[in-house]
Amino acid sequence: MLRYALKRLTSLVISLAFASLVIFFVTEVAPGDPARFMLGMNAQEDTVAALRSELGLDGSKAERYLDWVSGMAVGDFGTSYTYRTSVGGMIADRLWISLPLALYALALSTAIAFPAGIYAAARRGRPGDMGVMGATQLGIAVPNFWFAMMLVLIFAINLRWFSAGGFPGWDKGLWTGIKALTLPAIALALPQAAILARVMRSSLLDTLGEDFMRTARAKGLTRRQALWRHGLRNALIPVLTIIGLQFSFLLAGAIIIEQVFYLPGLGRLVFQSITQRDLIVVESVVMLLVFSVILVNFLVDLAYAAVDPRLRQRA
Amino acid sequence: MRLSRSLIIGAVLSAAVLAMALLSFAWTPYSHTAMNIPDKLQTPSAAHWLGTDHFGRDILSMVMVGARTSIAVALVAVGIGIALGVPLGLAAAARRGTWLDEVIMRGNDLIFAFPSLVIAILITAIFGPGAVNAIIAIGIFNIPVFARVTRGGALSLWEREFVMAARVAGKSTPRISFEHILPNVTNLLIVQGTIQFSLGILAEAALSYVGLGAQPPTPSWGRMLADAQTMVALAPHIALVPGLAIVLTVLGLNLMGDGLRDLLDPRIRVQR
Image 1 (cartoon, rainbow over the protein chains, first blue to last red):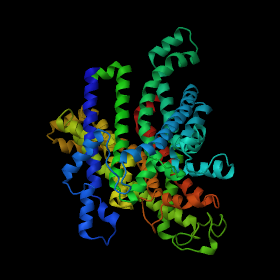
Image 2 (image 1 turned 60 degrees about the vertical axis):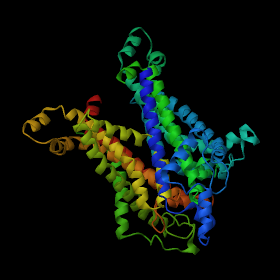
Image 3 (image 1 turned 180 degrees about the vertical axis):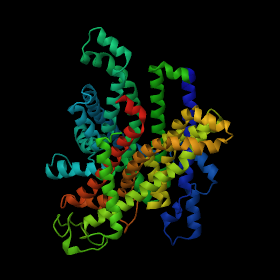
């Protein structure tokens, strides 16, 4: 297990190094000088040069890359060009919206997908199964930002159960915060729930064909008992992997959904920073998202190896 | 060979969208850019079958021309994935177990680890919004998908007798890859291509929605939705129509992909 963990850890570090290089250099070739952008087109050359030096933009690319990466390693994301405040602080503020939103959506997606997948698998080939599968086809085809707009139209504008957007802040109470994130979380969760329900169903169907299920039935368990006691637990392994992977889709999806609901999360921070050419913020947010995705995948791999000894041996 | 219901429904939906896009080159009810403020935000009527938007533009005409943008972006992005991913996958399979295979597959894993939408947003934001950059941003993430599918399909083929025979006949590895392996993984590529095409339509819509896809005056379904967002309370149809266009297109492609997989993958057929 240790050897496997070390191997995965090496690949985690390589992935992170590669990701940081790509993100840094993609952002570096961006047209437009942040210093000139901040000072306007008519600024004097020496003023621009002074600001460039103050922002740390005058070093070589390699120096600046190392500065950026070594800073991030100790939690220092640098200083925003536009707001002159710590990027880490700006990200932390926004994370209080984006992270709960992604987790809320993950919980909803699981809560919808598990019963739907189990129901469909238990009724394979019957109308109930076909209904669930049809619904999941539709769920996968719906763009979540459009679904979000439809939710706003129905539940905020027509029924007035929720507000159409914005976030009152967690200091207004937990319930108020959760309520403001409910429509965005539903919009975010729908396509993921559809995918997860399909995985749950096919994984359960695979398990139902296994020898140990036949043994369980032969011992006298009913179909339902065998499904709950033996099938479900074994079918969960691939499902948990997908749940881990979905975290990345949810974080990325949150960027778009935040636009629909005017939520001041990481997504809005990214778009705002892009228009202000505040590249250090863009770099850092993207790196943070990539880091969390790579980390979650790493943890999923480890968890998977912990429950399935075959994986450890293969490594 | 029986055509499945999902293949038929999917093919009909996809063909309808394609036909609509092609028809728009020759005919649209109105010009998709013609503004007519007095007629703004009209609900569907005989004159404007799907109503008008906040500038009085005919929504049906915009949706028809928008289909062109969606299809073009997704199609070229799939093309990039096939053009680069398939040779990589073939090479990895031909040199299986060597450093080349390892480098290609680990490179794939690296790209897979990235949240594609975030990187697509980064690329289009940095290099400027527009259809070409959207294509590149979506296309990059298709490369590892096709490389992996090709390699997976090709690996077992390399052990087959007809490949051995080609080898005995003195054919080189690249020649065997293209003449014998590639035709036998085409089915897999068609199925994967359909799926990536539908994902490309969704990605293009998302990028256009946040203003990073095709730019005005080129209509795109995603941007129509972004424009509709502030009007949704006044005229729900202007948000409903482009959204339904995306849903039906993606649904059609996904159903077609499922149907094609059932049809082209003999293993699934046997299981049924």
